[in-house]
Image (cartoon, rainbow, N blue to C red):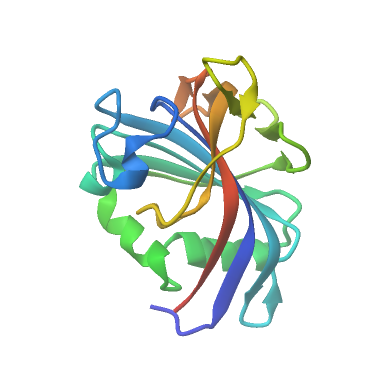
Length: 203
């Protein structure tokens, strides 16, 4: 394992197959019995040794036969095509688990690793409506939940969940959530959506 010091922080957007609220974030079973999801990360501030990772993006797509922490994951990652070779190598070390931190646990849960790819990652984090896209691969649109009694949008926040990626954030709904990667594809539009911020480090 690498002993390079690193840290990443920034914005987070997630869509998955669960109903709004996602029981997985509280250590419970997925609402459909299985888990399929995509997570976008926009790095606001990041460093790996002396490599600056600020301003680039990362995405993780996965499918699991049960809860994610039970293993059996099929996973692929996308790195921002704007990243230099040096930046891509640094991010690859982090997401592979070789750089330590909580990412080091992920390889033990993966049954089928589809590898790391590149794409034009874009995330919009201003306002209530958030979007994340990789042209031709990912299209996610997140909106706040709607109060069923009043019909009005309502900000629903959660804190200190068991989710290591982003323990606190806003629960919402993905009015659009499609993934058309050659190895992992699904459409969970209308299901769980989640936004927040992340902060990680290692080793």
